Image 1 (cartoon, rainbow, N blue to C red):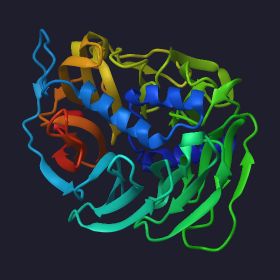
Image 2 (image 1 turned 90 degrees about the vertical axis):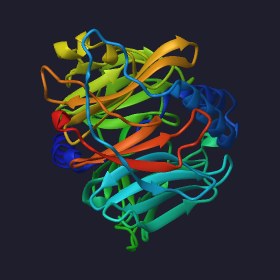
Image 3 (image 1 turned 180 degrees about the horizontal axis):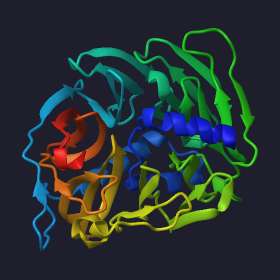
Length: 396
């Protein structure tokens, strides 16, 4: 565990994660878990409809007794993807912005790399026979993808790609659907027995991948790693969000310390790590809290006092900033107000700043002083463009 801790501390700040799975996907995952044969393409279409409904009414600030600060910044369209393609997630690493996309409802999944300076497409890889292609970025500009047939919950393969996506290495089959890169060629993969250390040949280089289960990294009994979930570094250890074998009881657990766990929901928790703390919402529309490495509450007073942060849809972090999509229920799967805010992760008194993002926020990535946001113009549309915004000074 000391070796893992050293690697994680050194590489966490360099890693830029793709956005977490949207809670609306849970119904599709439950159905797939029970049937084990359902096509993910149909599930993706249903999940997309749920997310767009959840985006709700037009963007506006949640009412508060003290009006929140509003950043006087305007965005510009960074890139628009080809017609018929939908952006599902984005990430930033070095000079590139990566967009994960699907063509139509049943088409292939792909990952494209765009030059951040010009918006020019520099590389693209397509996974034509995959139901699943969850991608993330890691140290050294590496790009990782978990690729496989989620429709029958069979084993998947890990791909390691070069920053421009033109070279790749393919690893062995594993029983998992997410991975945590810890070096340019190594990732920790949550499996039923704990954390699998997978070391790959450099993209395009000969050789074979090696794998072994790290001792002392158990996740507890009866957990399912084939489904929605995530793994992030928390205070030098690995926090994993997973469910039980029936696709329910989503909870966050510390690898190697299964008694340290929080949450008990039928959907994945929205969470992110910043400054050695876990920012966590135990379900859609629940309050934002901050937890330490022991999963104990350390929430600052300004967070608990702010009405906007009591109804979290999603939470992200990047560059020392916390980003929160706030949703207020109107009735089932419909929301009466929708806000997008940020604040410094290390702050004890805020402020909470509202960003004037136009449209419906689907996902984001950030690097330095630039924020990249996936949005849709209407509740019936699909996300086909990425807009960049300056990060408000009060949120840095």
